[in-house]
Amino acid sequence: MTNTPETGTDSTAASARPKVSAWNIANVVTVIRLAMVPFFAACLFLPGSGWRAAALVVFMVASLTDLLDGELARRYGLITDFGKIADPIADKALIGAALISLSILGELPWWVTVVILGRELGVTALRFAVIRHGVIPASYGGKVKTVLQIAAIVSYVWPGVPDLIRWVVMGAAALVTVVTGLDYVIRAIKLRQVAKRARAI
Image (cartoon, rainbow, N blue to C red):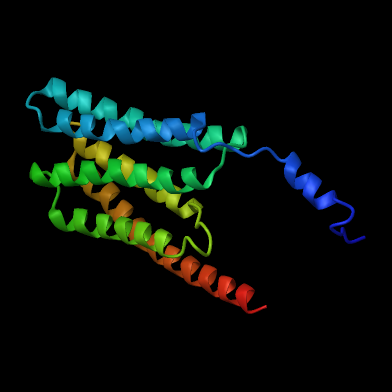
């Protein structure tokens, strides 16, 4: 039976669902990850093996918080539009700081940094361009891409890793980054088309 305004069933159900605050523990973890970015970059530029080790530790801890905030959001129902947007931004800030720093230090070719960051910035701009139609959540491919990028950066920050391993992992990360970027473009186009059809009804 279809509910009508007179029954009040739909409005009661809607009011029964608690509104999730944007300032929940999952989003706080995301903000903390963002705050760790400048500290990581500073450690990377300071001379000495001790600071290099510190940069590696900060980067790995910051990367692990990406898993933590996602798990907290799913387990406790803390998924918000703020989190869907802030989480990938924090990821891109961390990855971007690492790639740019490594390129400035002459340890990573600039073209790799340009390709990866070009995709990341493009997807971020795409998210905001279609946000009035809906939020594009992170895909499984996007998570694989993030893991590969983290592994590649760790191999460059960690002293003594063979160049062949670094290039193989970074190459895989760059390839998946480009492929998933094309996937986001397709999803954004579909989202916009669905929104247009909905407005036409």
